Image (cartoon, rainbow, N blue to C red; front, top):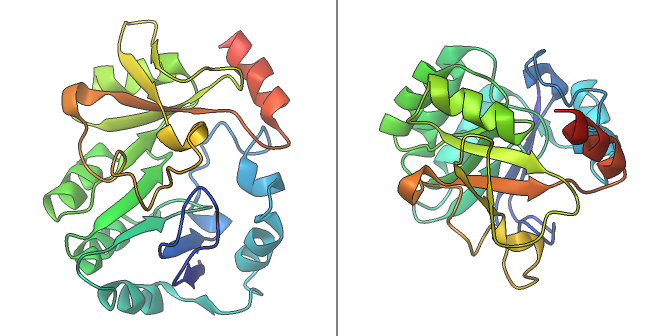
Length: 219
């Protein structure tokens, strides 16, 4: 399990913020996007991700080294964990990451369903978003754990504005999708609990968006 730490991201949507990529060994086997539209498998960062997963990436770090790098970040900074990959599969490691974060504004997503671990991380000041693969899946997560912050995938054609799940829960499209001046470094939507539990929706994008659109049409 290796990680890649970039002090200042050059990704347009992220903006100039610290960013961490995790190897594929962190991904839950239950993630429906594996081999079925995962952007990290085919996107611009896929070469780096494959090298990191194989333990051959330049400047890769161990988990302990990553914790040291996170602790050394300025206290008032927003950063992104998991530009590819997921949280460490061990609950204790995820809690150690939350402790190292030290209350900073971290943007974290997970395809896992370890709700109690995410609650503990939140109590330590690291907010975690539960990723879902369609609006109905978002409803299922919130039925099981109403206190979770949830994000989901929308069809590539989804317009800006409000959308709704089958159960009537509100979905707001990620502001960076259509507003060029908005980046993760300038938006705080995903790094803290959202008013009224609004779900954040990310329209399918990248080279596999048609594959994702077909899967969403069947969901």
